[in-house]
Image (cartoon, rainbow, N blue to C red; front, side, top):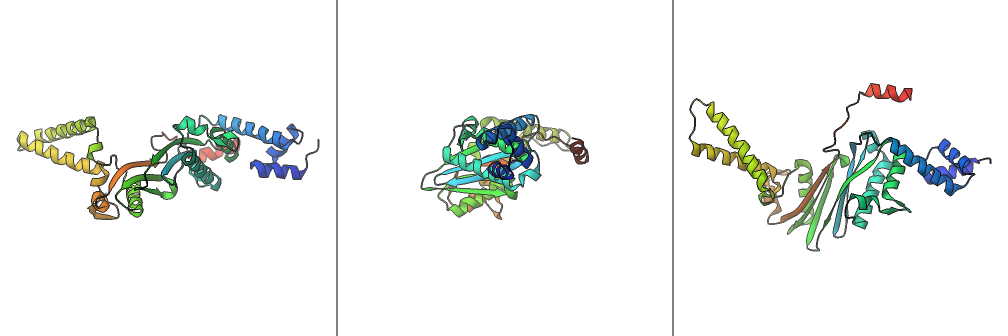
Amino acid sequence: MAISAKLVKELREKTGAGMMDCKKALEECDGNIEASFDWLREKGIAKAAKKADRIAAEGLTAFVVEGNTAAMVEVNSETDFVAKNDEFIGLVNKVAQLVVANKPADLDAALAIDVEGKDLATFIAEASGKIGEKLSFRRFVLIEKTEAQEFGAYSHMGGKMTAVVKVEGASGEVARDVAMHVAAANPQYIDRTAIPAEVLEHESAVLLAQAKEENAGAAKPKPDNIIEKMVEGRLNKNLKEMCLVDQEFIKNPDQTVAQYLNGGQVLEMSRFQVGEGIEKKVVDFAEEVAAQMKG
């Protein structure tokens, strides 16, 4: 059957797919809009599957706070160019909203959330086919609070890193400032009580070995009791750098985060940085463009 331009336009507006793809879908499905939509979905998923071996190490992090629940997500793309695309930004924000609304137990449960009659995994796969890059919902975190507690959340560098904290005994403004500090300074622990014993033991052993090696090469070696004090001092310095409450507050280095909290307490903190821990593939840009032109 002949496919009208009006039908092609209608399907294009419904799916966001290219004009020729929409025309092809309608031809394959005898002009049936719903069947054509499914046909494009299937092609979008197939297109996304071909990208499975690509590395999605760019992307965005985002947060959503709804009442007493906060969600933070990371969704990856292959390039930073796509990460700045309005459609991709909208996708990331939608994922965050779905997570905060549905409170999934894990990533598998999150990918199974219903979105307009399909699961989130399919929704992302379709977006991947439409945008033309591998997209990956990598991780999320959910934090719950009571009415007496406050959330602080902050995204830095346009969503390249995001932090969320839960505080007690401090205002929402203070909580947001602490989240800003967490995003920028990346503390490993809230305070020293949160540091595992094995981490403390390892850090002490490394510092002791360093001090003994320095002492062995010194013109005037120090006695063991002095070495122990040196190690203790260095350990304290390192622990201060690891712990949020002991760090110099980013907005006022003359006070620590604990002093800025002024009696308030950070109960939870979480921070995502785009692509951390993902091994990025280094590609020569000129070669990549040349390869795409050949394709």
